Length: 289
Image (cartoon, rainbow, N blue to C red; front, side):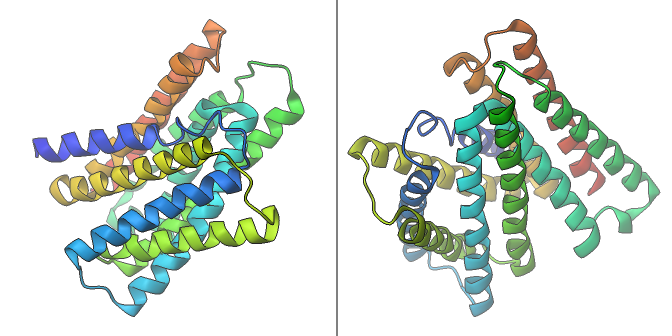
């Protein structure tokens, strides 16, 4: 139990730190995503060959579909961060993902609604908390640039939708995490390289950018494996709730390391928003137990 909680907390730290190496990288979000997904795929291939979990054809194609949408979400997320910073984008993206994933769970996987009116009320309260967190986060304006702020919020919204869609094939597959993460990272890598060929046409970047992008991919992969093992030990509801602490971790990075917010009222608003979002996620997870 204790080990599972520790692993879930570590996963939250890693997930909240994914974008730290790449936030100040000047190259396009497509280039960054391409190298981060490439290293994720190569490392997941090594893990797969070392563990050799059973993998089915359904796991392969569902994993690839998941990876395609994950890459779209990652490109949108990085684009949004370049416009309005990591703190706001991650908070909004995670909030949208939590709400949409919960609604999808109600509709497609009989979560919450099939377990009584009390569960529904708790879930509804959790969604209200998260919407409140989205509103307060999106209302924070550090610099007066309305066009940039609106575009950043739009890309945060798109990334939340894409990341949510990427979860659904994994839920449908109900596969061993060690098995499905391999085709998933293949889909991520393939999609990113196709974007490079069609949009970027060529790769013109520095070795430093490649290193930082790959470091981001390694951090993401480690966070995923930690969360998989944590969920196996303490269950999905608790593991999911603790994993949402990544919103707070990302907020702390944006405040104390990147100095995205200099106004005291904005710093307080972001921290409060992150806490409210985490409470909402916890209520939704509790409603599923």
